[in-house]
Amino acid sequence: MNMDEHESRHEICRIGASLYARGYVHASAGNISVKLDDGSFLITPTDACLGNLDANALAHVSANGEQLSGQRASKTLTVHQSIYAATPQARCVIHTHATHLVSLTLAGVWTPSDILPPITPYYVMKVGHVPLIAYQRPGAPGVATEVAQRIAQSTANQKTIRAVMLERLGPMVWHQSPAEASAVLEELEETAKLWLMSDRKATALSDAHIDELRATFGALW
Image (cartoon, rainbow, N blue to C red; front, side, top):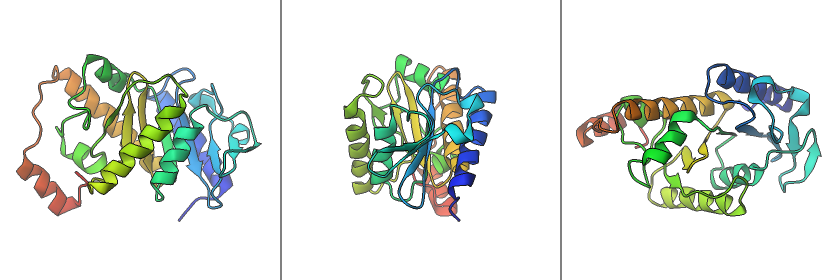
């Protein structure tokens, strides 16, 4: 069941505070949005700290990007909108500057189409493929276009994705609710941590192991 606007406002604040308290976000980095039933969006304000959001101050933006109420919307709004347009089932998008994932882009990702190898079953089941988006400055208009193109390419190749990685900036993840999007983000960041801890030498699960996860759990990989 979809949340109404009141519930969505408070869920954004709850998820933001939880991520901040556990070190998945810091300072004023990161943003969260929710798509409402009427096609409009709630999104955290620009330069807001996710650890102490005010439900009433969240930006409310129309489907065409017009600010309706609240503080000024995050500068990444256009990227969020491109994800919702390309992925109709998505109802929440989260962007953070997650430490291990950003560090991974500095050290070198596994491949441009998959920033991490499938080293754990839960990464395969909960996250799936995560392509790298080459660096552009924060808020650059070309990012939204490229993210939409990556989603379209993955869909055409029958590989549903739930995240992309912005080089030197951090992940953008999406799902049907804030709690589910947060779970994808956390699994993604923890897998990056594990791979870096192995000095990027941990081996991927075998094709047979991944086939088993597909058959048993419907894994997206």
